[in-house]
Length: 164
Image 1: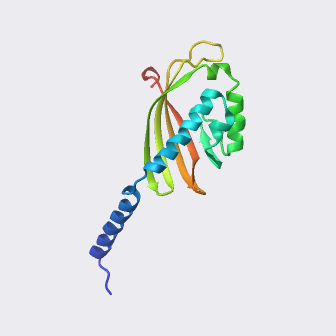
Image 2: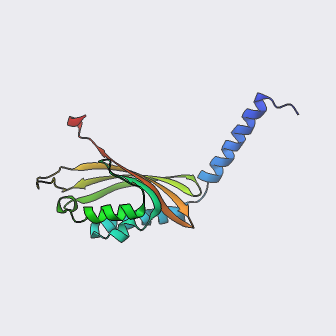
Image 3: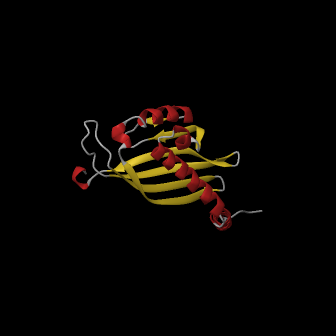
């Protein structure tokens, strides 16, 4: 059988349509609820200064980096860091206003979540106001043993126009 370029292109187009239909055509409403609950657990953990709740939906091996470049690669390291942060009155003085969560499923067991929030009321080490912080989160969720876990979480802060 002779395979032509036209046949290869037709096959690729067919396969891409099948993959897109299978991944993006699925009803992910239950998965979305579980992912959003995991994010809510983390947010409530921060508000309550509850390390266990804040980290419960992270995978044992995770990759978490904050807007200042601090990186932790396991849930245990993250627990230790959050325990430290939750004791800092300057950090915990702020409140987070959540703007949105955009969920994209890359497969039936991998999802990307882009979130935007605004952190207000946080203070610098000397106690002066930090100023509002526009924050973006990129979380990668993986379904492990039937549960959605955060396997990667990157946090970025948008600079003020005057600092660009």
